[in-house]
Amino acid sequence: MGVAIRITNLTKRYGDVIAVDNQNLHVYEGEFLSLLGPSGCGKTTLLRCIAGLEEPEVGKIVIGEHVVFSSEEGINVPAGKRKVGMVFQSYALWPHMNVYENVGFGLQNDKLPKTEIRKRVDVVLQDLAMDGLGDRYPSELSGGQQQRVALARLLATKPAVFLMDEPLSNLDARLRLDMRSEVKRLHYDSGATTVYVTHDQTEALTMASRVAVMRKGRIVQVDEPREIYVRPGNLFVAEFVGMPRVNLIPGEALPGDDGTLLEFGPFRQTIDAALPKKRFVAAIRPEDIDLSFKPGLGKVEFRVYAVLATGPELFADLRSGDTVVVVRLASNVRLEMDQTVWVSIQPGMLNLYEIESGSLLSAWKSEVSETAGEL
Ligand code: ATP
Image 1: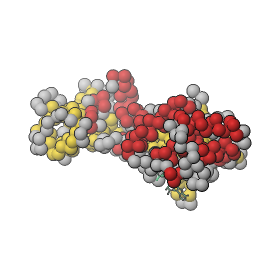
Image 2: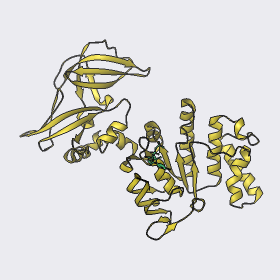
Image 3: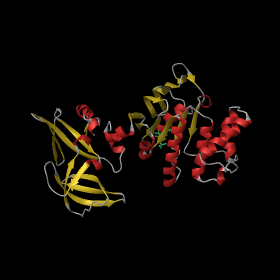
Image 4: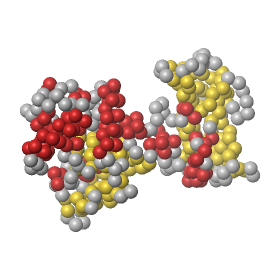
């Protein structure tokens, strides 16, 4: 797969704030890459640098074959000439133009003949189920319809690269869900390389083919959604992604003759891998903890502290001494407050992180990657 966008050593500052801190990123042709991270981590700035709406201090950006920015070579191609299409959180429609004119606006700029413009606008409006609304003005449309017009405008110009900045966050929850499917379908049908900024982990994980998680101006992990969720590369990603939050339990690895004993909270597990003696933080997702109503080998006694039913599933807050774990269960499991239960951890789903750096323990990483196929 070719590289559609190549970002090298990019830095963008606003005064003392380093919004993008010497970052590298490759976006492959046709992929849907999501930039995910908390507010202020620099994702919008990175997207705007690609679009040409911000000028970085240092670095290089290549889109397709064209160098669009290079601090070294003194190149900064203006936004309008980068052949990228952008959709923002605010739909940025022209209020004095009707739907038809808004969608065709970019094409007029490209000096296309009127009949061609008409044809293209008709096709995209039909694709987005907006035919019949061409004469309406933005004020006569719902939020969802306005966002569709913004998407139609993007599609009409047929850019090779779509840049989207939280395009669905102004919509209500239900409409957002529908529009996620539409944007995903639109990406599939168009085959356009897409970079999609969001702070919403569900949006990133459900829509993207790869997710780049950002923190404080840096990309801390780029991976497929399942890897980001199952094998976060560091504690920040482990905690940021997942609802409810991942369970974190500090512990220690104790090497022995028959492998390594992992002690964390009330858990004791011996694994075959040889790990050095080291303190760690164990991370385990709520659905990777097994619960039973009887004691047994490797099972640890916990008390039910609270049960939170959501409808399709329930979350049980369990406690043992200082250790608190949240377990995800099917909605038909019956649990009483203060009931005694026994829990065990699926070892393949456990991740161990260094306390100081927060990185996945390297010895653990190679161990789990060998067994990854069994997960
Ligand atoms: P959000 O999800 O809240 O939009 P973000 O991850 O997109 O956040 P950016 O908008 O890229 O983050 O901002 C990164 C950092 O740069 C923040 O500290 C922000 O305050 C700062 N910043 C962004 N734009 C400007 C600006 N025009 N002037 C000064 N500082 C800015």
